[in-house]
Image (cartoon, rainbow, N blue to C red; front, side):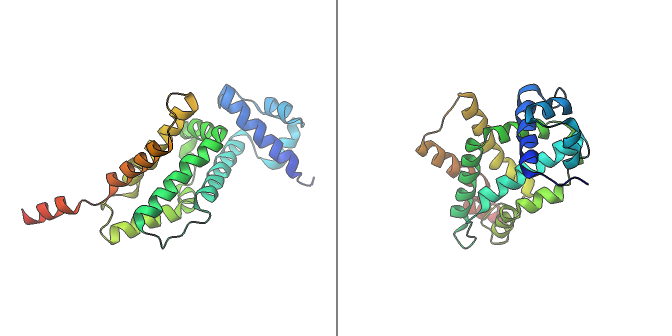
Length: 201
């Protein structure tokens, strides 16, 4: 059995991301990846079972790298709103630094292949965020809604702003980003006045 060469594996991954982002998932072949990575097609199969496995492992790798970037140095003892804004800001900054990863995730997430991903594995990568949501709900600081709904009002809009930035449609200044983070927090923050009014009624 041939030994793994991590430089070749990295070259395969980088070539795959570049080609898929330019040509699309369906129109990128293993032979094209091998040519750009400067390896033989047979070499790819040392590291990946087939094209589907290659794409899946790339998706998981990119998500894992994103989670490490976002949560490294995260301190859960900070006030919830401060912790939330730190994580959201780091997510925005990470994908601005890694536009090729963002584009790949977009393509993969919008393909049927996403259904074959073990959601529990992805959830494990982002467990600190889900813990933050759960802690906020338990302490009646965050609205008691499913975490998927909380994500849809917070992280997903931030990813849309990353897309706008990449297209040149909108580039946020510092104060605009901070205002966006505040709006995201306000969208999930429990409104005590409304809750009191409902309870009184």
